[in-house]
Length: 368
Image 1 (cartoon, rainbow, N blue to C red):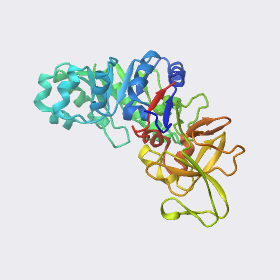
Image 2 (cartoon, helix red, strand yellow):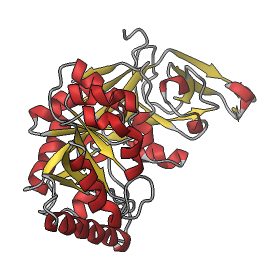
Image 3 (cartoon, rainbow, N blue to C red):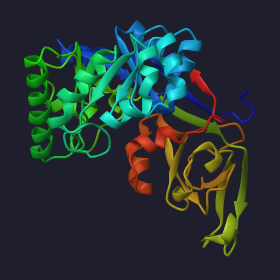
């Protein structure tokens, strides 16, 4: 329902444009579309369908629940789960043809005897080339790979993750790349080199991809969001536009306080508008007294604190007097103006990933 006029418009044409741009850019590597966290807040099911229609041959998620939800919705593309899976879910991974990640030899021990009943389970071996989050050390790769094969599982892939690919200094990323390439050489010599090999995320795909890698893992850039200020590409088209409407317009007078705590005090007569969106929708409270929205193609500053369900903006300077029901853009374009996820992230001291991932399920996603 759109009772308050609040929605996130999802442009599937922009998403397909971004994918096709990368499909051409990284060829002969393929694109693995990362759709974890409800496709970074964009809606995993429709985004997954659009990815498959655009020519993507592999999807990736964070947890098996996300993969099972896609399977239940009819997505039949190969899916890789990045993170830990409890023993009790391995049968579901096998029966639903979902590939899983092994990040340590201890993980195989944890799965234990169950693996003997799960012959044919597809595994991607994660290698820690420097991030120190997940993965076997490079010197342990061959032993772990042999154990996977000996247990009757399928060593479908091997991968690692670049921790600094979005930074200006390339030295650590190149060190990680060299370590990963050495792992591929070792597996190849041992006759264990799997078909799927992937290292690069969105930022890495611009700078460090190789013909040796079967895929790049495309997440943030596929949604038209920039990997960082240092890795920027104007060819990307933002996929999400978040909008709402004005719910009230009124005047306030000198000395009057606005919103919780009265952190804004008017020094003059002002025209203000109430916006029916708040932090329960994922509109960050840190935008209090500093964020802006677009109304009639102009920027309007937030006055006072963002509440759970609404906030107030200054509309004094608008050429046309705003009315209830007028469009308000929180994220995206309106006329010649635009508010980007990168701008919002900069204002609240975070990254653009968090801006879209935080938009709650209370905000309907509407395909355009």
